Length: 112
Image 1 (tube, rainbow, N blue to C red):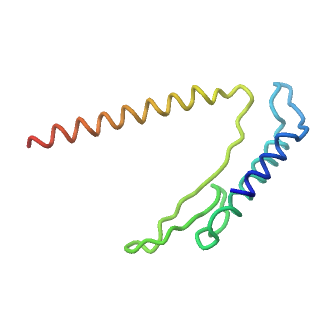
Image 2 (tube, rainbow, N blue to C red; image 1 turned 90 degrees about the vertical axis):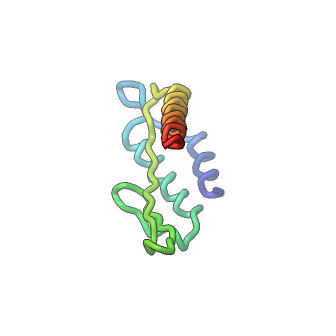
Image 3 (tube, rainbow, N blue to C red; image 1 turned 60 degrees about the horizontal axis):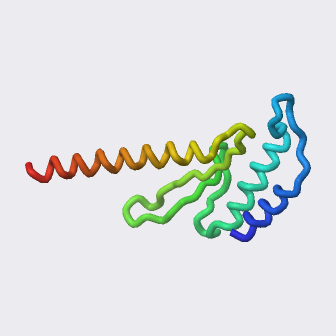
């Protein structure tokens, strides 16, 4: 992830413009996204990265039965009000509940 680290170091020190809502302006956000996606592409194994599509980086992982499994990786620059701690906590809670449902389902079907 050397290229990604270099990009984040540049972002830390970059002077950026703000829009009227106090967020990073769209041009700077687009630049951050572009640089981040390019860095991630360079850091991924060359034989898996197919290219870039509108949705993001296209990765194909070889698969014995399907030929390849396609994965799309993308970046999104959030606005300054984004609460990453709350978003992470909410996702962890969704995942915890999903695991509980699976475990309950497995427990219920074991007796059948």
